[in-house]
Amino acid sequence: MVLELQNKWDELIGQSVPVSKLTTDLKWVELTNKLANLIIKNCNGSSLVLDIGAGDGSLYFLIKKICRLYAAIEPSGIMVKRFRSKVNNYICQGIGEDLPYQSGIFDLAILNSALDHCFNPVSVIAEAYRILKPGGKIFLLLTNEGAWYKNLFKKYNLLRKNNCREHLFHFIPGD
Picture 1 (cartoon, one colour):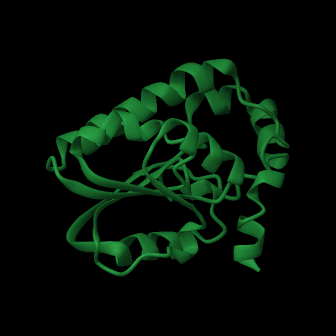
Picture 2 (cartoon, one colour):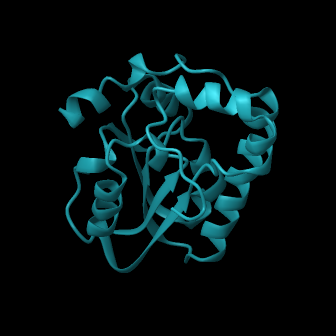
């Protein structure tokens, strides 16, 4: 059931209350750049990387210098097509709850704003650990539902959360 729903991800895209252009054009870019810098700073220059929920592949261009192999998995067929139009690397359509890789082969697993879209975040993290080599690292970026600006615009934020079918979880720092 979860696999069937997650593979129909494209039906959910664009059905929620949109976020602001400030968020999409500035804040997300800034956060992705910070995540990329953290990954580069904490990894050697020859890593086997799995990007879980890779979206359109934008993160790849920021971290490619540390990648010996960059692989990606993404539930949205639309995003897989966008990814392939930008990045000539390996991507498959699938879900983080059921990664189609052998255990212990990757140095890094990345979940860049993806965990809040998963049906079972605990299962996704367990799968990410499973595919890592001993001493491998997981890099995780989450949306902070407790952010000051979301508290400032409570009515809009509540409307967004209540009508957001593709964000299945709304994490706060304590989570």
